[in-house]
Every structure is written in C-alpha cells, then in structure tokens.
Length: 373
Image (cartoon, rainbow, N blue to C red; front, side, top):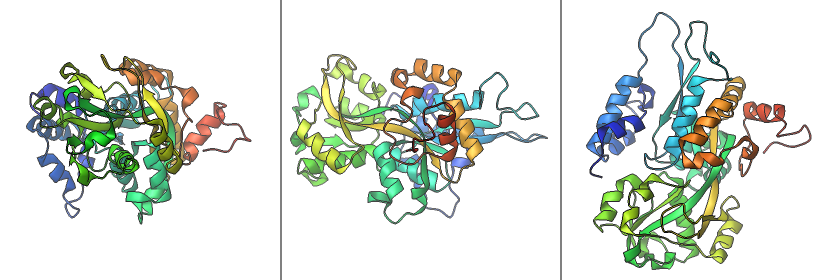
C-alpha cells in the first residue's frame, strides 16, 4: 500500500514489549513485520519504545492487551475506544481504577492482529488479555472444531459482551462484472488474511456455491493492503467480515463499487450448518450509491480466557458499560452507535465469564432463574 502517512500509522499501532514472542518460538511476528509497509514497521517499532513502562520506585500499571484486527477495519478503532475506557476508569468515576500511588490499575492497549482466529489463539496462549472475535469463530474455538481441532487451551474462551453485528462484505469494482459469488471464477480477489474470521466464513460461502480457492486467484491480504492494488486493477475486489461502514471501502468508493449479494437460500443453508451465521443486510446508504445488499452477519464478541480473575473481568465489564466508555464508543465510530448494554447478550455463542455474568445479574439483564449464555 502506498501513500501511507506515518502519523496515521503511529496513531493506529499499539504493540507493547509484551507483544513479542520468546525467541525460541516460531518467527511469525517477524514474517508479518517484513510483509508490512515501511511506515507500518516504523510505527510498530516506535510504538514498542513508547509503550514500554518507564522505571519507577513504585508499582507499575498492568497492561490489558486487546487483540483487534487490521487498521482499516472496525475491530481496531472500536478496540482502541474500549482500551481507552479501561484506562480511564475501571469502575466509573474520576479517580476509579487507580492504586494508592495514583496510577491506573490497568492500562488498555489495542493491538492489531490477523483477526478473530488469531485473537482466539492469542487468548489461549496468554499473549493478550482480551480479544474481539466473531461469534461463529468463538463457537468453533469453544468446541475445538475446524482450525481449532486438537487445541484444548483455546476451548477456555469465555465471553464478556456482544458488541455489534458484523456483515460479510464482498466488495468489488463495478467494472469487474462480478454480480454473484459464482462470478469469482477466473478473478483475482483478496479473501482476507490467514487467521481471520472473514476467511473462515468465505470458505463456507464458496463451498455453498460449489467453489473452492482453486477456481479463482485468491489473495490473502487485509483490506488496507488491497486498496492500491484495486485502484490499479491488480485485484478485482476484497472480502471482509466487519462492521459498517469500513474505512477501506470508503477510500475506494470513487472507483465505482459493487457489493456482491448472497442469495437467501444460500444463507439459509449456511445458517443451518453454522447457527451463529445468520441472514442480514448491508443497509442502503451505508456506502455512497450502493443499495441494500443481502449478506451474512454475525455478532462481534469481546472475549477473555476462563482463567482470568473474576474480579478483574467484573471491573472490565463495568468499565465497558460505564457511561463514559459507552459515550466514547458511540461517538467515536459509526458502528459504535449500535453498541448498547441492552444488546450485550445478543448472539453470544459461548459461556459468559463468571465476572461478566455477575455484572449482568446485578444489572438485571440475567435473573436468578435465567441461565447464563
């Protein structure tokens, strides 16, 4: 991707010294680093230096790392707003969440990642404290199925909240002539990065159309790395499961775009196999000149590991639904307008963490007679 502004990169990257795997582990972080634009690499390295805690004579704050997604998606901006809310207040109030030295107990850090699958695996490995994860991916992780088969640690994933519905967006150039998934044949399309929930869902969609990745020329890139390629007609489109609107789509809207619909009968067949993938739509007007488009949707969850302390998760849940954090989320991104405590339990596909369950019972969202998700 060309034309990336360093200041934008710096504002979007939040790695920390704890983000790096030990040297004896596979060098997947380094591989990912080498494939990113120079400004992104520079931002990541500078972010490491800026995020490292300075020495002090007292106790340092603990970092609460949240796995998000790519820079031009919705997970990252929403994750940053949640992280800021956790840092600002753990239980609500001007000085809440600070220890006896006047330091914050937790400092929220939003980290870019490959997406839902990568976040679930990072949670299992203790590389992050929380992650934004599609409900269907969380369900597969909890059951130890699909890409998670044989991984017992990932089954300890637990939910904190449901945030908003994500839409499968198949974004193509209008002049590419792609009007259905069947038209993928012979085309060059990015179907998102390995480790993303988008890729898992798109493989289900391809299968429902009797297609596979052998029938076209797939590319495995996050949307932000497809923009220039689409402008130069090196790609005909990209696929992503995300909230709306997406920055990546708006950045190429001047080209003339088409959102590929999914037929109702295809969505029903997929839903029958994967109950947390449900029929939905991208509403008319979300993107300039694009009409209402039927597509699959799934809820985005905030998840943690079952081993996390119950009181800590209770504080995190309280911070998430505090007035200040919720106001920041709703004002900070268009998708945030639908984030609400009243829908916090919608579409949850895995058990709640006990700390989150306690919060919802106290607020009356779960009665004593109502079993937790």
